[in-house]
Length: 170
Image (tube, rainbow, N blue to C red; front, side):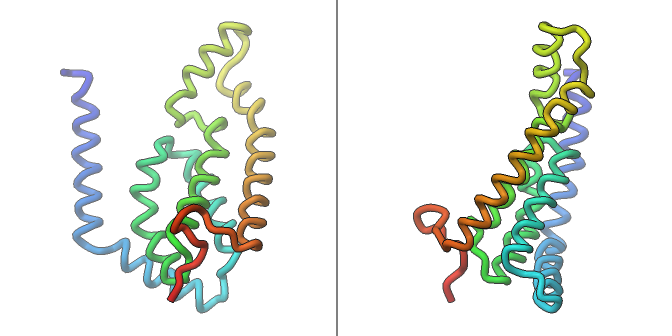
């Protein structure tokens, strides 16, 4: 039970934050103001979606859990992008691209310690820095190609799945 105490305290404060965020409607306010701001400066289209991929990839370096990240980002970005006429499926796809490509280089990933342990099984000199420096080229290549694939997908106007168009139909 003592090992769970830290977790329980952390979850308590996280739940308080989420409850306050929902109660205050701060996410909705940020989404509306953010959409108006992005529309006013003309920052829409492919550049906006690609920028969101990079934001998601950057945040992933500091927060390992994809579901926790999505729980924080979705209440802001989904309505914001919907106000800009993007379907939530596109927002989710862009998030998943950014989230997945930086997993190999973030020590926050839940399996990172396991990867280091397996690598040290075969070469005792391997450590966190070696693993990260080995995986950076893969991260860059995957980020580049997944982003290019998303851009091509958007240019072709292909749906993201059943009832998953790129844009909201008005």
